[in-house]
Image 1 (tube, rainbow, N blue to C red):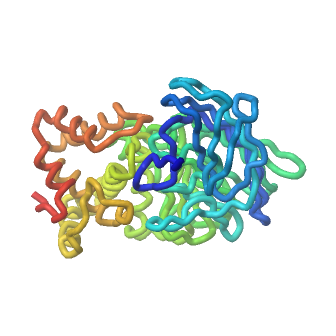
Image 2: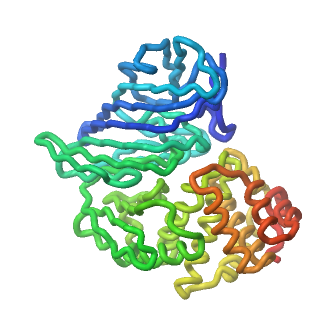
Image 3: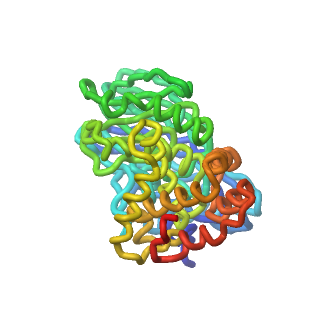
Length: 433
């Protein structure tokens, strides 16, 4: 019997027959050996009548598995666990899985998306979950439309700082190690869960106008203020434009290693030391990753086909921050990138780019240009109310492009089908006006 796939863009991940409600993860990690021992307690519910459920776990061995305190039949098939309850589950039935597992965690590699997941640094760890890396460090239902609350407890050697999603609720020092406990009560997709471990100092920034606690985690001596010291100003601008910041806190991790790109996670972002330069070409990504807290994290696309709802919005937020900071206007950025895109192959469909192109830069820029065209069509007042209403109405949930089109038409009182059809379904680049 074939195993399920929840999203055709990510084959071999996710099971739509059940949903996770809460993950309670207790991890013990030895940095110099890259050895992980974990216990995961997953509270779940059956979404349909089923005689089995499938859990994603890549490269780690399960020593013990129970379901509601009893041992079900289960088998490992590749990077998945097929669990057969003692009695079939009926729709709505709740259950608790407890898995004890261990091993040497490593990133997984997909044909189109490269590696993702738990990755060693020179002295520490990053977890880059997008899009398929969550199973490299905890058992999960790896689908972006399956949000749950999380408790993440990590024990590691003294001298290391652990950063994870949500609020730091406990820090317990022991002779042989130190335990850090984080709780993320707001619903979170598995790919947005993360653990960052390094020899970091934690610095609290002035929360500024938005009143959001912001923390910088960086190695001692790192000169992070030129590039990251203005986070409160970006937070204030985005809170005004998009609505209140959707989580209790925000953390920026700056590793001592260089990273090719920043990493997006819920309530935090991770940058390499090569992003300490305050040059706009890099600094724009500071705004980009913060914007994802609204567009991608609290409001999450139900499938990768609609990834423009994340990346197009975050890219447009770069241009909006440029305006707010007194740099170039969004109109100027739109004209520049439209001209650049016009010289590239015209073979991408924004509304369905396909697995190979879902992170193509054209998705980012065409998505931003669509939003700019919409802004010109409906006017600033309606456009920014649309962005705020989008977050307000769908906070903590998963959405589709059709949801956004419907809300845009509702608030503008205008039929926008032609505009969206042109930008989302046509391969050729539409005119900017």
